[in-house]
Amino acid sequence: MMIKEFSKDGQRILWGDVIQCLETVRNESIDLIFCDPPYNIGKNFNGTKDKWKSDESYLSWCYKWLELCIQKLKPAGSMYVMAATQNMPFIDIFLRKHLTILSRIIWYYDSSGVQAKKYFGSLYEPVLHCVKNPSEYSFNSDSILVEARTGATRKLIDYRKAVPAMYNSRKVPGNVWYIPRVRYRMPEYEEHPAQKPVALLERIILASSNPGDTVLDPFSGTFTTSFAAKKYGRLSVGIEIEEAYIKIGLRRLNICSEYNGEILCPPHKSYKKKYSDESDNLTLFERDNAATSLYRQNY
Ligand SMILES: C[S@@+](CC[C@H](N)C(=O)[O-])C[C@H]1O[C@@H](n2cnc3c(N)ncnc32)[C@H](O)[C@@H]1O
Image (cartoon, rainbow, N blue to C red):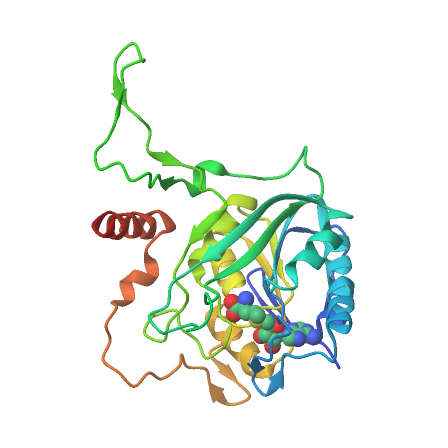
């Protein structure tokens, strides 16, 4: 397959197969990589079925692009990898040979629908946070502070201080992250079966990269990673094989408003707006505060 490239203001889109596209990226040129591959669970990506002949063939394909991603990462770079829960142990073992895994993150969400009636339904996805060099990597803890949710109903006072003061209730998030999945009525919704929330990528990008850094996503889908990277002044390289999703990326990154004579529009939704578009502009901090007050009302 030929590779086609689009770019504007430091945001690059590569349309093609992941292996071929990664081969064109300069070695040790990327600060942060976020990998959200097909999970081998039979999802339909614009007509292409996410299913390999065997677990072995799926995993050996994963090892190929993972190895290339590691080559492209700068010596002080960071890489986050998602995978289906059943495949993550293999990917974890593979990555441990090449990188240091700093955190094994659980991204969890809820669903109003019944997930399963005869077993505990799956409502989380694992994410590995890895670095090439554990003595030198970016981690901007001050940019991702959240409100501690200890269950305390009032602010506690630290009397050990010379002048008693309230305990600091802001903290670096732990490795269990509650972030709602993208639902149809949310302003960020795009037509894709595995779109990740902007809030998930915001936390990763703010923590593990700096303005002007280059962020790569080898399976861009709706280009959530590039969208969040651009929002925070990072450069991006997004790879995707499906033309329908390339068009989403071109629009979301404002690279062009027309493609082959077609005006690129957000998905048409047949319902009355529930959320205001302003919620799109909320910072991670503001959204976290909103989530904290919801939590306090419920517990
Ligand atoms: C899990 S989705 C990524 C979703 C993305 N993180 C988002 O927020 O929208 C995986 C994506 O990988 C793409 N893909 C599958 N095989 C690919 C390949 N060989 N090369 C490049 N992209 C591929 C699929 O079309 C799909 O959009």
